[in-house]
Image (cartoon, rainbow, N blue to C red; front, side):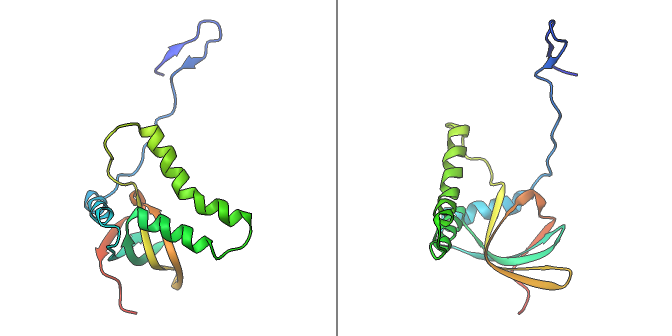
Length: 145
């Protein structure tokens, strides 16, 4: 174990489990970065995930946030108003935690007009957000309809 041991309790301080995370494809991260530089741009992609295939238009995080917020405006109730604020709140929190550090490569990918196929049954959704490290493979373009 690493860390210091508290003499009075015998508990190791500063020691903890080692967390390993899958590494995202750098080229896909760079594609996300390029799309982020022009939020009005979208790129058709097909992603291979452990659960199946998903395809749609790759969009910038800012575009995803705006569309997420817009989509919730059509839902009634206080909960929808709170959910619409969530992406911005997450960004503010992450900015506070990272301080003045340079922006790292993206860890999340955002798609619009999505079709997911798992077990042969296609499911469509207006928006999707996923962890880049979970993408097993990818290609430009979408399969024919």
